[in-house]
Length: 362
Image (cartoon, rainbow, N blue to C red; front, top):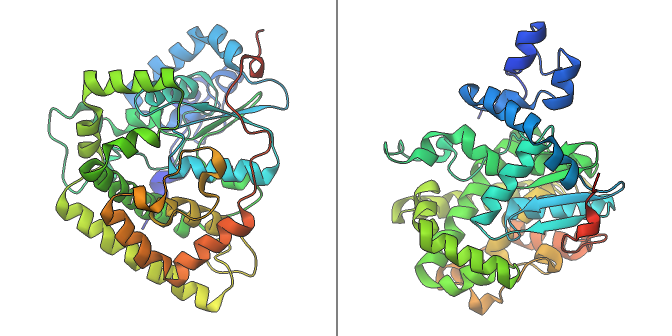
């Protein structure tokens, strides 16, 4: 599977090109370097000028939300398995961070605001719910959100904001922690494993246990009121079914993909103690972290989300999830995930809810 779409192979952004004829992501002008940083290359071309202008106009808000020195802010949907990659990576790096916790719905708006405000926020190369490449058939004409996949990327999580830079996605977070993931492995985890786990978990929860859906949001009472209001106004659950291409047929296919991936990982672990960067190794690596985090909702290993999320007990999960859990935990790959969480899922350093003093006021 080609990684071209997810690497920095596109020409420089529209502003770079206009100012200096840039053919790479390196900004051609100090103005572009300050306001764009090359991250407009992954926005839909007709929208790039508008997004750049909005970023310029919202400079005061950016100054208000910028984290304090030696602080960073993790923006994400608390229970997301991709957010767990970023949270685990930050914990391994030893960096102090706080977390913006929003339920699904409000999280879309908050993530989009942060991505728009901070330079580098639009350069995410990860897949996202509603990614047109993940759909089994073209979106219907009325599905505006699905037709504009690039615009959907604005609301993708996670995003890590420092005082002077941004980590735009999970894979950049792994690199920040000093680990590596092979390009082919990254694409498979990002485009196959992660989306299939998401598809399975949401489908079975929606079918059997909507109370659990509310529980795992893991947000304050006020945020949960916003969550319920958003569901009432926009029927978010129905939209998510379309975005994630949920049907009995696609979910059955997703199960087959997951079992095949566990077999593949198990075969690699027969020859190596760890996945390493995805090609096998003697030490814990980026692929071990990413695979463990992405399949975590199918296994519920110890220390999953490290206290940041209301992780349910096994008997609270939908019956089909319990079935998958029993089958997958007995595999070599499943046992490896449990081992990685027991040995390497260190507590987050300075973990906590976002507080006013974590922001700059100038």
